[in-house]
Image (cartoon, rainbow, N blue to C red; front, side, top):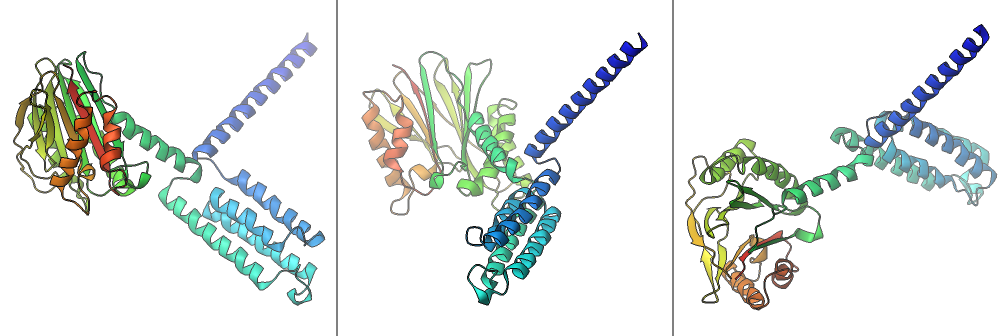
Length: 381
């Protein structure tokens, strides 16, 4: 019995030890992927490649050039921290010295360590060290940098999603960042408030474009999403203006338009902060009407007042909200751009505006180097 108990206890201890080792290895792998773990494993692997390359160069310099030492150096610049990178560089320098002594002076043949080889290896090491120092200063390792940017882009996309509308209403939005980038200074925040009877939409154009405005657009979209529905409609833009002023950005201004639509009656209010007017198509006359509200830019001065303009969407009517990148260009003014937009939109009056937002951007501002956003809300006839 004592012998069996000893065997069982040994087996139990071995099982527990194996389980702890497996958990520790898994945690180490997850931490390394996230950029939180140690880089000793990568350093050990790269340090082993340095003597392997040196041996290959000494035994067969024709197929294994001395310049092959740049391979672990480049990999180290992506994987290692600056302190560990210096240790790898010391090993690479030692390998170059050994190769020089083994292969002889560079004047004796081409398969030797030449001054050009040393310069190439040193230049790659310098660039790798600069990249590693930048990553250490930013605090985002390369393994997580792309994932983080993808996550930020998806958050902006999710926050810009329009809520479902009741039967008889159609909504769609198209967003095209400048230069084909993934980030835009234009964004939309929308929600159904007042028990779902009211649709509130905020279309905002942050100063700048593309990647330069993407980080500020992400911050503002989160803040605006928190304010929307938490304040009365007439209190949103003053609160957003105060929030922007508190950020104290060098380019701390934005334009915004706030739509408050009653989904039962079709009555709406538009409040604008320096934004372009909205366009309403009246189904009865077939004409477009500009709906321009009065208000200054967000983030310019405190105590700004925003005066609404009212209207009604009747069956068959369409309301368009858009940013200046869609109608403004170097070779035309805004009025000409609006005329072109309404002319293109007239093609969808008979067939319906479903899927029209993307095509309107394609037709009016396909090659414009600016962020473009278009929001369509129509009431079915």
